Image (cartoon, rainbow, N blue to C red; front, side, top):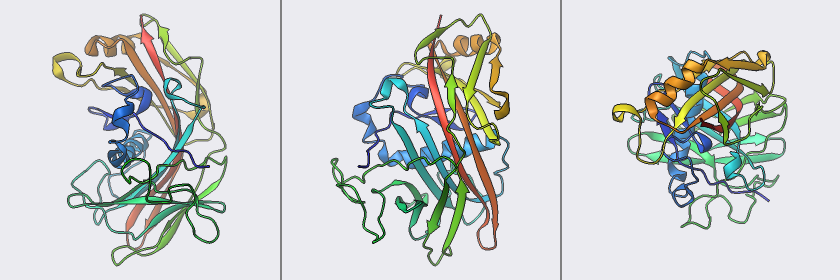
Length: 321
């Protein structure tokens, strides 16, 4: 049975170009269940921006990229979990000229249909057409397709209990699994298949419980479990704000973003960083997130530079004393 995922409020962290969801929301740390349905349509591009920004923070050169095919898994924050839910989602876009996913005015090209396949299962990505941003592909539109091509799940690829909105489903995580983006093609983009191999394990923050209090007068040691061979790993620490508050002088506060070496297993955040974030924002809690993954850079004869990624993230809320 395929599970549906409802997502909490997204917030833009100024200067870093990173959208953070769930426990990282700056605008409201509590669950926004009544808003999550309306945010389904905005999730696709927001998640794509988030992943591409984290990829750039990890050192990838995205400046001349024309295409992004992004696959990611995130553990639901503890305060949102029903059954330790792991959510997997995918996004894709191709541009006629080099651009970045967070450029909402850059027109994505029609690729026909896009699906993510793992083993015998295939998950269709929702095709989103907009007069301004062109064509982009986001959350899965239905359950895994069997050998006959039928879409599984009680609502297929189109239905759903909320006014006909597409069913949002998990793309399952398979340790070390080979995932394939399958593009049927159009008169703008040729048909193609793009592979990416997932890491052997998901990243997990250790040593903290969600909502734990920390002393910002002391350095903060962050430790993790994950894949030591990952070449994309980033730590993001930002303030969590109550609804309607943005920090000092009405400006959003830049998060602390740090590229990490996955093999280190730990990183110490200086007390001064913690104090600066709290002082600038007035926040009573900080959001700590780790992102870890791998990427492939492909030079396609027709499209140009394409990035294909697979990664995971974990996050916790930290109350400040």
